[in-house]
Image (cartoon, rainbow, N blue to C red; front, side, top):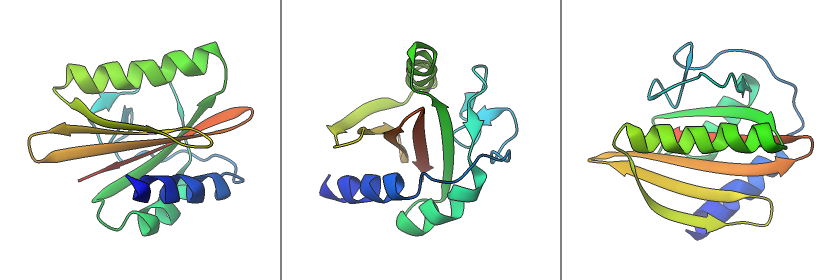
Length: 128
C-alpha cells in the first residue's frame, strides 16, 4: 500500500485545476459502474495526469465534491453503490490528506484515492 501513499501525494499536488465535464460514461461514476445521482463534479483535465501516475489502471476518473456534510454523503453513496454492484472493500489506508480504498469484484478492481483541498474533496477513481 505504500504505492497508494505516493499516488495520493501526487493527487494533492495536482489539485489546483478548475473543473470541466467529461466522465468516461456520461451520467455515471467509475466507468459506468455507479449512476451519478449525486451530481459530483468531473475534473477531466486531471484524468490523463492521474492515468500516467497509475499505469496499471485501464481507466481513471477524477471527481470533486464539497468538503462538508453533503460531500461526505456523496462519498458514502459512491461506496454504498460499489458494494451494491457486488464490489467488496479489500483494503483501506489513511493518508496525510485523505484515504485510499480498494474494491474488488472477481478479476475487476477499483481503487479510490481521496484528498482534501478545501473547499473540495478530490476523488481519483481508477479501475482495471
